[in-house]
Amino acid sequence: MARWLLKSEPDVFGYDDLVRNKREGWDGVRNYQARNFMREMKRGDRAIFYHSNAKPPGVAGICKIVKGAEPDPTQFDPASKYHDPASKPDAPRWDWVTVAPDRKLAFVPIDELKAIPELADCRLLAKGNRLSVMPLTDEEFDIIVSCADAKGDS
Image: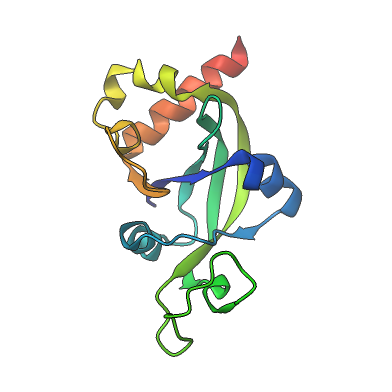
């Protein structure tokens, strides 16, 4: 199983929304590298659910991939803010994966993640990284979860 990080703005769709909905298509990804990462995702993979563009941004929970990549239907919907008129049903450009909540984590802000030496090479913390979908190593995933668990115990 692979490990991932998925970013979402909490005022648009946060971890609590995923818990309430029980499962959701990870729609609206319009970056080819992020899309390609989603195409690598398999059922059973786990991902850190990260609240981006928040004050402060940080880790909110763990979700699991319950269905692998398939065409994101929002690309074909003219009423959707994610509509892509150049994408055609017989040659879709954009995919989504379906995710479900695994467990909520104690919130870990990005500044605390930056202070962990073992995460120095983590893509999430790389200068200028704005990808909404990215792989994590097993070690990075485990360190992030351990940090959240330690906060939850205090």
